[in-house]
Image (tube, rainbow, N blue to C red; front, side, top):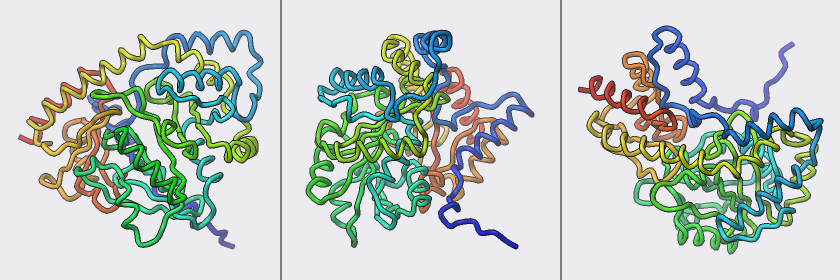
Length: 382
């Protein structure tokens, strides 16, 4: 007897995880691998967060918290929006989640029915469309280009043959590092409110910007769902802790979904996350390192032949058009790893139709690794 596997379960792999496995093999065999493939800070959680976690182990039972999170952490997040964006967000509209991955699952379940249509930019983070597929929601890809800095626009939504029920935006974006500026975010929020489209704003890279600060969708619409995380700016990827800012009509649905699906976010991670807000000096030092890495690669990668780079306004990625070098980015990245030890991610992870001619470099690591990677690539492509 053969038991079935559901179509919802047949989502594509997250290719960067395969790249990480191949990179680990390279490191084990040659001990020379340079990790430019994964969107993860090379630094640990800030010291204040680690100290808070240790204190919690000694003094707290670390049992379940409220489904929406510890009240003190939700209050601290509300203060963060007031101080950073000048936005008054009641703590009651904030939900603490199992990283942004859990937040997206809760957002999609609470806002969309099976069969609904949700638009998102391509290239974009692959887990958006894969989570949507697993939930029976149709992902509508908006093919963006450099002329819109790879960001969606109201005109793209208006040009669709069939209306959509939702729109996901990311600013700064993965893999391009581009941002929606204030007027662009406002225009999208207004369009979505007018057309009855639920806007979901991925803001997990806020804090990591280079030319201007990022704007939050909470400043432009009370019906928007904002998803953020302690993974990137706060260097807490493995702690799996994030949050959502919810419109009032979705607070109770997310409360119930969280209680049933996850019960609550990790208690010890919540203690650490609250303390991370007081570690600004350490975190800003990380951003200065990312900025140095970005400047180095923007100067050196074109010398190696990577001349077509997206304008990285934030996050820690450079997205490269490599059509002049290959039409098979998966094979190209594999050969690059095998022959140079430099690991990067093929664009097929981010763009199902055009990713065969693109790739992503992550510059979240050490500056000396970036310099050595650029040197090896110059020799390789010479």
